[in-house]
Image (tube, rainbow, N blue to C red; front, top):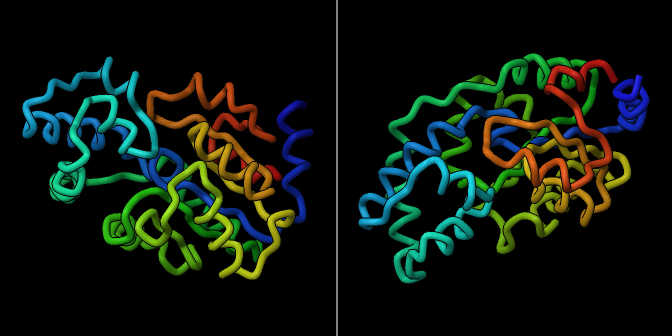
Length: 217
């Protein structure tokens, strides 16, 4: 009953915009493996407790927590992306069905992610979703990272959709804060990353148990 009531907030929206990592793509374990390799290459220890304690969609937060000097961040980015290119990324259960069903209903779907354009486009293409995800915006397209609303507002502008007519679906507190700052209805869906407590505390407009619940609206 509560889920049905909250889903009514999503009716008549013209666009549903998604986070990528942890929301549509199951990248948490791959990210962890790449962090282990990355920090090992800088002689820094990294384990699951550290992952849970330092995780953020803004990986520079993680770099700071590990005391990685800022002058090494560009090289760390390059190494992490090289490691990640060796990974195989699966979609979250139901992600493809949700995207294709929403598109069939005439609802614009897109992605706003902190991830780099080259990496995420490769993964989107691998899963055959590029035709459905219109005008995606990547972390490398904007100056400000989440929770700043720059990327989400840019996506809305490209879609010609007003904030009040859109929904943003994410798995992190930063996603919810970005949506709120942009004036967009926020939908939280807990994912595989170790951030469920902070996501719950972010108090999204709607919280769903799974992506598939979006199709009930």
